[in-house]
Length: 459
Image (cartoon, rainbow, N blue to C red; front, side, top):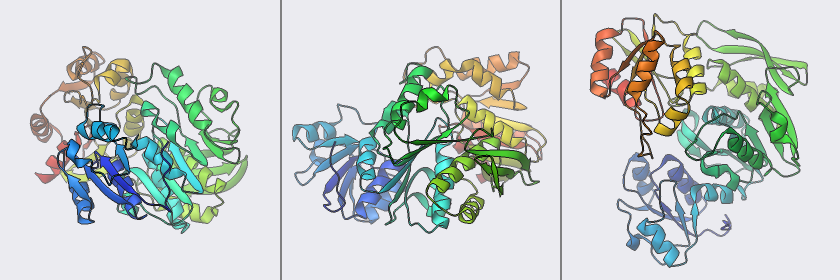
C-alpha cells in the first residue's frame, strides 16, 4: 500500500475526480499541502469548485494527462483497466491505488479514525455523528456520502485527531480501511452482482471488524442475525446497540410527536440515561441515533453535548428530503433502493399527515431487482399507489429478463394500484392529473428519479 504522509505532501492525480467522494478526498489533500490534478469525462459544479481552487482538471481522459511530476494516481470504481490514464501510469511505474485504498492511507494519518459500515443507514448515522462531533467542538475531518448542511457539502476538513467516514462494503472497499472505532449498523442481502450470497457478505463484515486493533471498539447492532459469527475471535472491545435490554445501549418507550419526530428512552447497560428527542422520524432513525450515541459515549463526549448534536440533525439530501408542494401535493425524495430501506421510508411516511401515499419507485440495477423481486413486491404494496419507470441500469448491461413492467404486474396481482410508465415526462403529467390535494408523493430510488420531484416543483 502507498504510504501517504501528511508531513511530506506530493502530487496526486485523480482519474474520475468529479465524483462526490473523489472530489472531497482531493480537497482534504489540498488542505494538507498536496498538489492535485485530475480528469473526468463529465465536468460539474464539483469540478468547477476544484478548478477555482487551482486544480488542473481535464474534461478528457487521455495518456498525456499523466505527467512526470505525478507521484500517485487515484482512480474511482468506474475506471477500468483499459483507461488510457491508468495504463499510462502503470507503464510509467507510478503508484496507482483505488479510492478505497486512498481512504485507508488517509486514515493512518489520524489518531482516531471512525468508520460507519452497514448495508443501510451509513450516510444518516455518519451525519448524526458529524453533528455530535461538531457540537463537541472536536474539529473533525468528515467524509460523508451525501450533502450535509452542517458542513456545507460532503466533506469537512478539520485539524484534530478525528476522521469520520462511511465504510462501504461493495467490492470489499472497507477492507482497505484502518479504523480505531467502527460501526456495523446491519447486514443484509445486497450487491449480489459482487457478493455470492448473504454468507459471503457476512464473511466480509467479519473481516472488516477484524481490522480493529486491540485498543479499538466495535459498535454493532444487537439484532443482526447470528451476531456471534461476526464478533467471534475479535481482538477489540465489542459493544451492542438495539431495542433489547441485553444490548449495551438500548432504546425503549418509542413515541412520535405531531410533527413526526421520534422520541425514545435511552438506556446504557440496563440503566436509564435520558429521554432522547430527534428532529427526524422513523424507527430506523431511532436505531441510527442509538449507534451514534454509543460511539459518542465510547469517545467520551458528554451526554448533553451528544443530545444537542442529535437534536440539530434534520436530515441529509435524498433521505426523506422534503422538496416542496405543487397543487397541494407534498413531495418528498428518498434514496431508498433496497426492500429494507423502502419499508423504512414507507413506514416513516405513515407518521406524516397525508390523504394517500403515491410512490414513484425507480428500481436500481437488474441484479438487485431479480435477486429481491418478491421482497420488492412485498414492501411496495405498503403504498397506496405505485408508479414505476424503467429500471436504472447503472453499471449493468444484462437485463436478466427483468423489467419494471414485471414488478407492476406482480403488484397489480396483489391488488395494488400500480402503473408502469417508462417516461419521466409522462409520469409527471400522470401525477398532476391524478394526485389530489393533501396527498404525499415520494420519489424513490438511487438513480435519477429525483428529477421528477425537481421538475414538478419547478412547474
